[in-house]
Length: 230
Image (cartoon, rainbow, N blue to C red):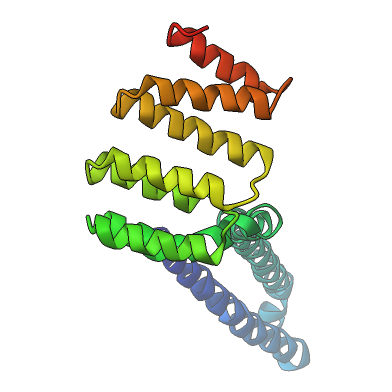
């Protein structure tokens, strides 16, 4: 609808410019030619009309100039609207993605197939695709988290979800934040889905020991307190 409006307005302005280029000139030229004829060979009565005819020529020229100014403003307005509404946001969007979202664009590439299978309800296929993504980016925690989520929530297999996370934790040299995140997710599955409180408590104690004096150890202590194990 927006582009239809642009096209209609553009055609109207284009038609206005076309009429502007033709309007006034022919009539003014004819009148000026008539003035020249009268001055050369016209009667006294005709020559008395010359001043009035000159004013009409000036009026035609002035009207054309005014019309040209109005058309120029309309044209600039249309160009400005298109630039502000469409061109400028597109440039800003492209620049933002180029500067801030390069990592997310890579992430979307490696996990695109897996997310597509999730949307189709092909959970087994999604697990396989996420495993491929994990193999492509072994230090990206998201594929492992997504696999565990599917196994727990969609396939009803929290034991496999716990195994996935445990293998991920033990199989890579994770950064502190990633390791703690995976350990918290593993503890939650043991506590919420498997009712295995001793293992959940053990994992939280491991977080406290592995990351002392950090927000992760503080969060682990809070979990233990919430579970009545503080």
